[in-house]
Length: 196
Image 1: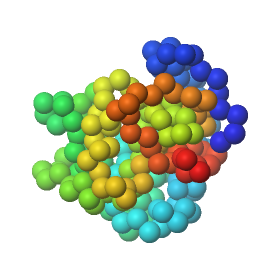
Image 2: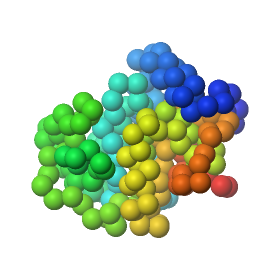
Image 3: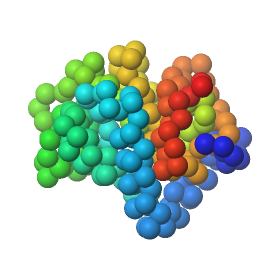
């Protein structure tokens, strides 16, 4: 993950720039990138040891997660996807074993329909979306703060992984005292442990 992209100084400017870049991704690149992130993730030792994977159903502009979701299930691991609570204050992870059972939830994102949220300690790896990431593990989210509220609830050993295109890795994201850095980044090009 050398040569991170330059960035505007503030979060609003960076959000706007990254949204534009994501919307210009060629469909061919999107498909190659989707398979690329799964190929990389499936080979790392942390994934091979993990039993429960917290992921997300990608939306337009995000790196397509469906190769990962299918791969997790076919590898015999437990797959968990987020569902936003009715009061929209947070999300919980729910176990998913069948993609046909997802339904459109908050913000138009496909969500699981289960009735019992998974215990946080079942998540060994949590894949985290974002608009931009830096090599220190700081993340620029979508401004709603869902992951900022959830990351502290995961067990200390959970590997939190920012998932995005390589162009979403920037030089530096303005961070605040309450920000919790991610432990790793995964793009179609490589896997990077932050702080190494």
